[in-house]
Image (cartoon, rainbow, N blue to C red; front, side, top):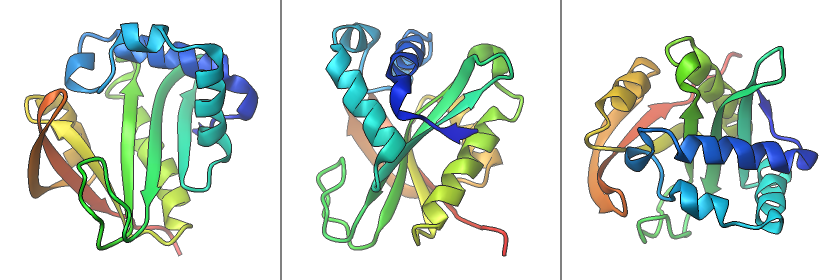
Length: 176
């Protein structure tokens, strides 16, 4: 598990296109594969720069020994007073995990856990105490996977572009 590197924009693009082409993508992503394919190289360079170097966000990837990218998770840090993705003004700092994808051949093998742990270390080092994510109400498999990692429903629900979603959160517990 590691943070993406600035020069890896083409690999970031390829993984996102693969992710949005997954059969579960309509329950997981706000964009379609067609949306991602339509984006030009400058978009991918900018996105990768933010994921590699950003202070308020980071993209992490799971890479096999054979250098195949098999998973990703991005985290966005939001400060008190900022407006979140639902238009709410935040009264506490928030770390949102977005864009999570694990290659189907590698699901159930601990890749998600390792990615969330990498995100937790990065976020915890920046003073955040919890990770938050949104998951489609009907994406029961994802909800179970997140629950196994310590995420619990917050009671917040809303409707987004992909339909009804629930918010889940877990405390960040870092080793001393």
